[in-house]
Figure 1 (cartoon, helix red, strand yellow):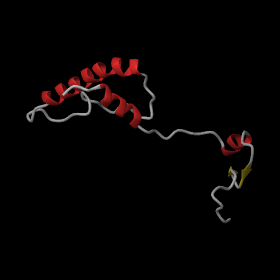
Figure 2 (cartoon, helix red, strand yellow):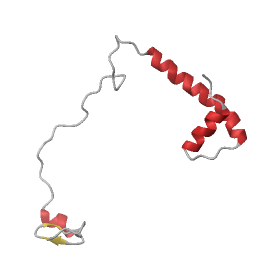
Figure 3 (cartoon, helix red, strand yellow):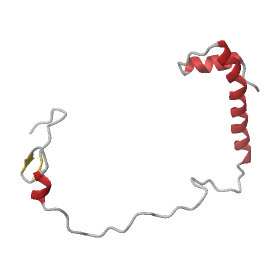
Figure 4 (tube, one colour):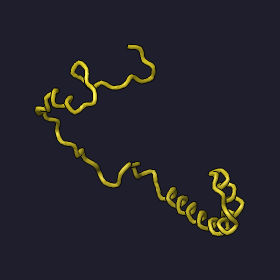
Length: 98
C-alpha cells in the first residue's frame, strides 16, 4: 500500500501541520519509503531471538557507596538565603498548613 497525497494531507491535519501542494507531492513517496522500512524491520524479528533493550550487555557503571565526611552544617547553611533549625528554609507551597 502506498501513501497518497490525501493520506499525507490527513496526517498533516492530524499533526496540525499545514502542508503546501508541493510538500504533499514530495512527502508522500518519502513517507512511503519510511513505512516500508518499518515493515521490513518487523519481518526480521523471529521467535528464536529473545527481545533485548540493548545490542550489547550492560554492566553497572556506578561506584560503590562509601561513607565519607561531608561539609559541616554551618558551612552549608552559610550560603543559604534562609535557614531555620539547621535546615534550609524554603517558601511554603500548595497552601499547606504549618
